[in-house]
Length: 53
Image (cartoon, rainbow, N blue to C red; front, side):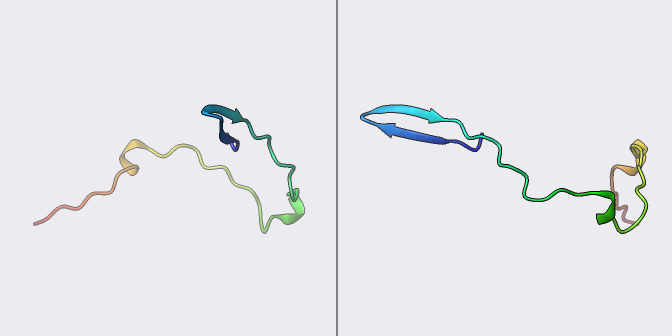
């Protein structure tokens, strides 16, 4: 929420925060290389496992 909870005279007040303005804008000139998109991984690749012998 990025706000504040204020207690005054035994009453509670909530002051909601607002979004901050962006401090920078990223463009394609900021990238180091081509953009690649990786789809979801197969279920068997989501877990690590160790088996003792």
